[in-house]
Length: 150
Length: 169
Image (cartoon, rainbow over all chains, first blue to last red; front, side, top):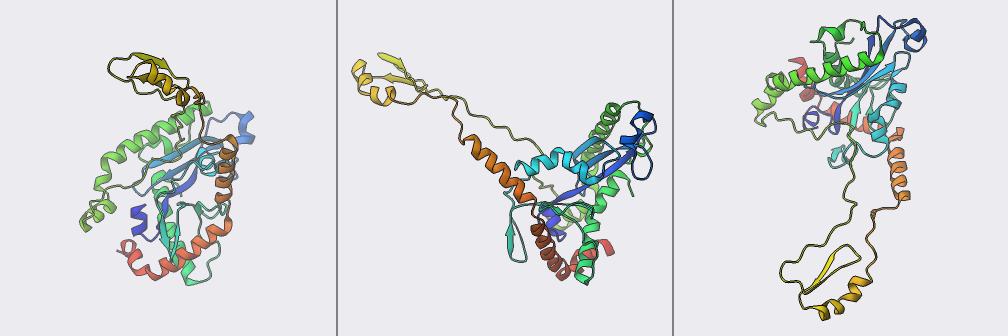
């Protein structure tokens, strides 16, 4: 969190994203569940990683037909956050004069607007929003670098 | 992860369990590699050059379950010395009187009327559920997320020159 604070995002824990792993030998009977919107069969893995490419959280095995939101609702990370067990509230941070205790993850734009997720502006209109999106994407890029996804 | 070629290519296993085991193993190996190599990363070297050591000051791992312990009974500390009349108190402690039976009888009100020490819990179950509902409600605030993003907008735009300098070069 200290390093994220230096990079303009105080309170940011890590980057959260999902990654589809293709499964060539998927049985035909399971194709309906494991076929993604791109027509390929696979499983989904949800992971959290930091800028050192250290994987802090991994949730694997969800059928590829589910989108990122459905995967997140099954993930133990989400259950821990909604159950109040995670994240720790003992690292307050101040942004624009407001002190908050609830750290957040950086996610992509498909994710719902929960208070522990920060997604980019879907349609940036002002220069401030564009600047924010650029920095946010730079933070999320570590995930792409880690998993080699596009 | 991309260091391990098996994760870049489509999986050729027969069951989901094998896929899951493989990915978990890859992640463990990946983290082992990162732990060995991360001191040489550019971001860490930059931090070290600035003088703050580049140490990782993150707190804990993600999503760990909390372990609640310590609900058991606590025994009283054993009293050394000669025990003239030692009696087991119903509260779990040992009421040992150094002064004999009279002293033990004098203290019988405190010891005898003490409630039995069951496995006491600090909060009733309803309080625990309320905390869970409260935490759930806190996470579902879309407005809070947007407010936080707007606040970040202003701060990032103000410091954009400094913040983007590592990416520009």
